[in-house]
Image 1 (tube, one colour):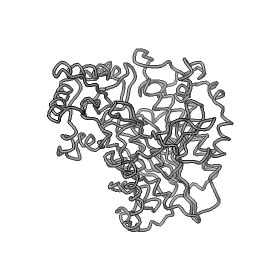
Image 2 (cartoon, one colour):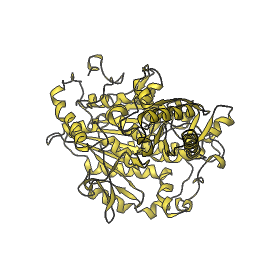
Image 3 (cartoon, rainbow, N blue to C red):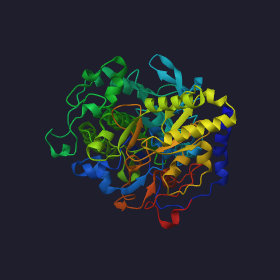
Image 4 (cartoon, helix red, strand yellow):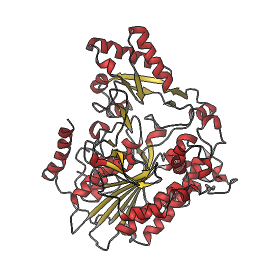
Length: 556
């Protein structure tokens, strides 16, 4: 089966030149350097709240670029994997196959989307290789990164890299043909896998040696502004009962470590982690920029720390807000670094996010939102299993990976009629729970006629055979279904989680424009392909983003 899927996937690559019709030529050459900043969990709602205190790179791009103020993800459950893969492929999960960061198999075991057991995907360790692998083999279609690499040739080479703390983010961005680099939390350094390199590049080894993990852990998190600054007036006072970790502000990273397993995690949850990733991007550029004017570089920089931190403190926490102020300044310094090395009219910068984030339910309740609630997954699972046992006398284990409910192989052994009865009972049980709006059996969701303008349409397009659960459920706004008793998430298709920034800036080309029209992030891949004058990703049917091209250049 796996060989068949791989064959189909590469058939896309082989057939594309046959069907591809050249685009009408723009007057400009593709940018020599394209840098795509994806700030993980950087919701749009931060910008109007914090804009007056932003003075660095984020503010520069907001003022000078083409600023899309109504950019949305059409995702039922916005997550890192589906967002990064969506940016690259321009397709829904029902085509690219990545329904979430992970899914469950028939034994209810977790399957991370980038897991690969094949030896040729083994991850590099300091001593050689780990026993596990990482690759893009679960992404079922090509992306704009793959198309860029297919266009590369000796006289006009194209280099595509992705840098991130998360393997899934980097892999989702570059697909199979680009190069992905991520952080090894066990070893405390950046790494990759044999799916992308025969061996760790020498420039990356040099970088890791220059930034030993022990030195990283000795850094201290200092507030960007004075503690009494009005910049923190929008931040909430510490609410330990709603947060999962101790604040790192004013402390050295090493002093926050409670056990050996969480040392890397604690570092990644600090502003210093963003600084390290920018330093890695600088090292990459110093080693890959060439004098060849026909060469191109596309660099994806996925900044994960905000996501890691905000899950604990929420979008109104002082820690979260301060990290954004640091990021704004760090981005300014990085743009200055690039400006000294590449002519600004040759550089395209893009700033966006893979998803947003919703407030802590307890914060919403405090503000008077009566319907805000937290549904704990262990309790919901226990309730479903007990309901089945009581009504049918059958022990069926289940797992919930929002918005999916998975049943174990005991269910698969039942006859079809019994399966249908049990599924309907679980559906009815879910719909009786406060906070849950609707539930569908898979067959119902695939067959139901849903208007594209409805939020339910997102659920229909986030299904993939063999990876989706037996039942899908939708919650009401401000309902957080989670295994954690504290913290927040981004598990729903509503405003807080799906509205994100999107800004393009290239001096003299893409600048000084505000777009108030509603756009979709899945339009990004085809738009980037148009800018680089290459074929679009094979499974994307989205139109180009408005405001980037002359009228005669907007049809694919």
